[in-house]
Amino acid sequence: MKANPLVLTIGLAIAATGIAILFVPGTFESMSMLSRDRRGEAAVRVGNQARLDGDRDPAFLDMLIDLNREYGDSTSEAAAIDDYLAKHPNDLGVLRKAVAYYENMQDNAALTAMLERVVALSKSPADIEKLARIYRLWGQFDKERKLLLANRQAKLSQAMAVRLGEYLLEDNEPGLAIASLEPVVDVPGETRSDARALLFDILVRDGKTAQAAEHAARWVNAGLRPAEQALFVLSLAAAGDDNAARTLASKLPDDPAGRSNLAWELVGEGRLDIARTVVNEWMAHADPATTLKAARLYVEIAGSINEFHSVYQDIHRGLTDGDESGVARAMILTRLLYEIYGYDSIANVRPLLDARQFALQPLLGAALSNEELNPSATRYFLLSTDLARLDPAEALLWAGLAKTNFKVAELADELAARWRSGTLAPALVPFFRETAVRAGMPDPAFGDPRLSSQIFALPGAKGAPG
Image (cartoon, rainbow, N blue to C red; front, side, top):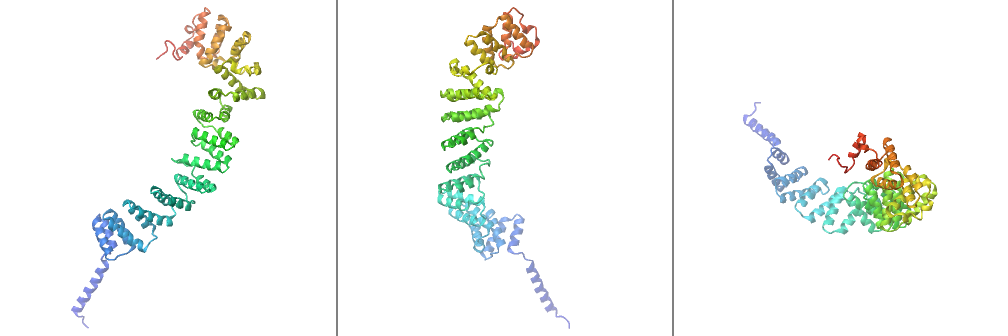
């Protein structure tokens, strides 16, 4: 049977129309193509009209929210958000877009409501903290408190952990407060000092002074300021745990200036006994120069409050216990008392001093023997002094005593011998030249190039370069 041309034509037309319909893009695809072609305004017009016509496809609405934010208007953006959340209320991605929208619109009530929904679903520390800050900003402290307490297991930031710790302390929950603070006290940050101080305070209040001291001792090596350390030491002492206080005081800052500051801070609060712990620990393993510096600090601190009892205790113990290091420290303290406060300041320990102790501080032995009118002992200790290690003040003392206890020629010979052996301190070179000339010898500087260079290297020497 021969096909009817009209029927065939109509059939082909219907088929073509059907195929054309299949290839017409939907709203989502149209928006995507327009957006890809950088025709955002056209894309958002198509989308907003489709939404008004009832399109509620999730992918379409999600894209429409973003397009309205960039190319459309806030009313259409809010409408797209509401339409989406009406059918999918627990979609975190769109809830976060709603948060961003209301934050941009500065609608605090709606922003807070959206964040509360986000937090309920996400339990994210970042979301919790954002909501807590908004509560606090608007004075809603009861809500902030309830939020933080309900989420105390979350890994909160240092600042928020401090807030939580304060609330827990108010609720008389020291154990929970400690648990919230311990993970953050070693994290660098602007609120680290606050976190440390709060944790320390809670531990002390809870009777855990040893644990508090352990934490603080660790912090000394992690940037704890001497003033903070002193405050912690004093808190332990005030709590009745002097042992913990001394243990913490003996944990010295790396910086010598910090050690000095720590001692002065403690003395300023009337605790010379604990400041002594700082100084003794400082001296325990120090080189001679550092030991002298620490001991001088101790004596000056005692003098500043006119309280020398502990200094005399340390001297007496050091001289009588027989320990070599203790004797050495006792003699340094004795020397400094004499240098700063004179002979009367050591009169009560003078009977304990003999040649064995003076061998550690021969210049002190020489000075005391001179005051006691014992020239032979004075000469002996002057000759026993290591002239290679004298500082300018010690050189001045040695020279003054030597002038009155040796003949000029004898003294010139002694100084020349020390020079030749390389054991004459630079600070004594001018005195050596002066003594040599007084003894009728040529100025040694003109016969020894080494001596000339030594003289010119002295600060303030005439003819020195510069």
